[in-house]
Length: 399
Image (cartoon, rainbow, N blue to C red; front, side):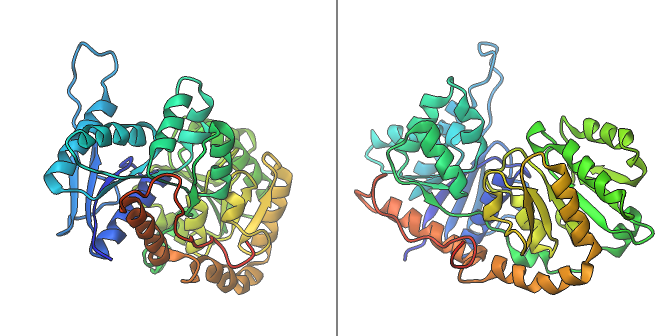
């Protein structure tokens, strides 16, 4: 298999899609492929540049003619420039809009010059579950999906939502998100743990962007239910519009003194390594990357059964699931896990094996799946309705 020159387009932030896309790009570069990130700032997880890892800035000038600057058009032009300058084999874009729609414009421009540039589009969720419900975006999203040369979704739940909302008539392959296990192979920062729980209390952690869909008030309510039965601390990591509501809820429930809110940080691994339980009671999650990160850190998860979360958390094995808004059940599950730490410690190798079985999960298999899909897209005459590679499941056989 030849090494590919790949243009990578993603949001360069610490959000789930940005993290996965950046780590995937780095892993592909480690395998010898040449990666060109094309976005408005260097990806947060990119780290230092390597011989075959490049970044191209998309800079939008501030023209008074436009009330809203046309980022998508500038992005398409930058894709054309990078594709021609570096002789790209394909584009791998994350999110249908604006990235896939811009890529299709770039591909059409290049086609006029006799240059073929296939597009692999990965759907991460918000472009489908949120924007997809807005009639103003629906035809553009459907067009971006249908016109891509290959499309992946990060969960079966997201694939189903996409087919239902847009009625697309093309194949969508499910390739679940991944993380690099080596990032979690370190000792917990005991000084940090003592700063959160000075008396050795169990630490319950929630990490998110604190948007309404995360139901952060439910996080506090679940914690209050646990706190009524045993000592504990709640560690809130992240920032967003609902952060102040969560802190106010803690005051109203009388647990504010046991809540530590540290805001947004660059690397969520340290908080997870000192945690005893992770809470994610979201209204919906296309995948739930933070839950996967918690499991990689050896932390059980109590979550809602929404969206792709049941594809990440195996009920009764790596944590527990409950209906959205069922704070009572989540509190009961959380207390049971914290009240039986020895049982959790004994179960940890089992769910870690489910997560990191190299035949099922992990960077290597994920990257191999993506490379096969990219090579297929790059093959002449292979288009949207072709048969793609057989992809690995998230969990062990039967899940």
